[in-house]
Image (cartoon, rainbow, N blue to C red; front, top):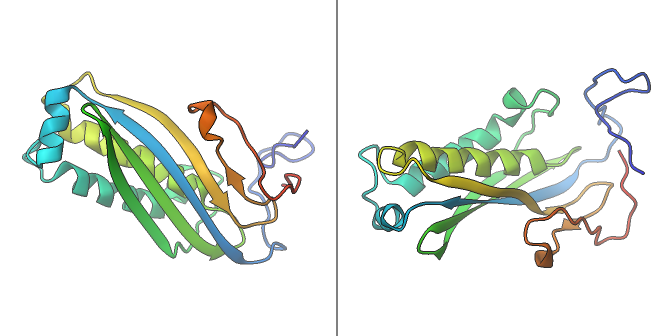
Length: 177
């Protein structure tokens, strides 16, 4: 079984030493769902849900900014020189928008937390901008979809699991801290 890398042999919290790791191209994509009332989603799609501006464009900017600040929010994350953050939106039905964030870095550690932080903050921004008209919104299924690069190999979520944790290491490399 894999070990938790943020604890030393005595159980003390630590930041993982990545100094001996090779720099490689690393990417991660995470998704989240925001579910709203049908009328709210119609207004989001039309671009007139909020006097604060276009909901999805503000959420996109918030997600990008959040990815860049992940190490300030998550105590043991390394600050990373991100090379790209892309936020995309897809309307899945009349009440659901999916947010996808893809983050990239050329570095010694992965960008999964940056992608997860980006979709989470983008989803919270949609909630914030629309709460005056719909406090019943939900944020669901924040999850890592894909990660590439690094010593532990690539990861692809098994789509048949409907959001359940199902890790499949597609390079068949064992996980290594």
